[in-house]
Image (tube, rainbow over all chains, first blue to last red; front, side):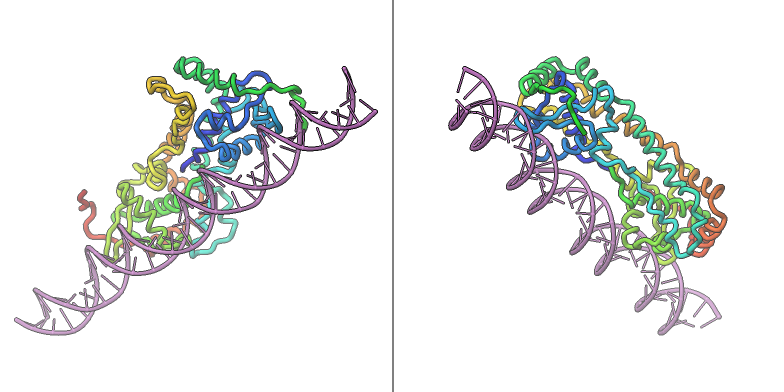
Length: 172
Length: 172
DNA sequence: GAAGACATACTCGGATATAATGTGTCCGAGTGCCCACGG
DNA sequence: CCGTGGGCACTCGGACACATTATATCCGAGTATGTCTTC
């Protein structure tokens, strides 16, 4: 029951990318500098987000990353699942069948009650994450964050964002 | 976001111990055999449950483990926290402070919005686990489980449980 | 002077080492039972 | 025959290796830019 710290970096980067205008991009190196992280390592997580269609990457000079869709359509659950994987945290190993008494498979047609309870809790966890959109995070930060911090963030984004030519000319 | 498989073993063992009568105990070796697990490794998890006052251990011959309190007062959250630790899964590293722009500590008095959202989700997770008592697991199994499996479990418990002398003569 | 081709510099992407955690195992400390011995 | 002391077997508890995952890093593939040559 421990999330990798890459999740924190991924959410922060996504929130930062939500502040870039239009179809501009921001290099991974700039994002890494923004949070004092290893550029090479952050690329790994950004790559995962790209693989899950949360970010888009533009190669070449003046390239970088940007959100693949509006921040209103990106939830924290999307990011967490992209980094940590979609499989549930509790994996039932069906150890109830490994006892000395071997029963027919028909005795285990019903789902293990423990598994059901754990999955129910995890559904609540995911539901709570799903109802928090990335735009909410940004809006809350803009509303209640410290003015100095907001100014510094905006200046950093304005300095490192790179405008692009073709807007949504993204083929699959 | 991945729970150790020891959680599953711990819950199954606790549910089994809920079926022993009175103050009788059950050796860890029997529990391990009941689920086809390594006896030495299961002891590690049972020891954690004992440290968290969920189980009680009786040394010596005819010793073993038993619940430290009625199954109605043991929740899945208690067991999960005992195995996985009480600290939250998402640990905010405060990377927002590690940027190139160094701000005064007064700029970060408010909790990080990302951290707040993640902790809120985790509270929902824990709340769902807390409302499931160990007695519910046992009752559901007794009610809807396969009769053959129930009979086998009862027989196994009856064969391996060891009655004790002093009932609740347990000092802290 | 304008157009095309080439070299270049910057970007992301995947393959590769290292540290931490979880998993699995082993041996030692402690306790109650059983038996032998003595009264 | 009964009480007592000691040996023993069984239990849990903590300390010790191994495997897997997460962390961190490096090098290679790809592309738009800028420049040079040529028409």
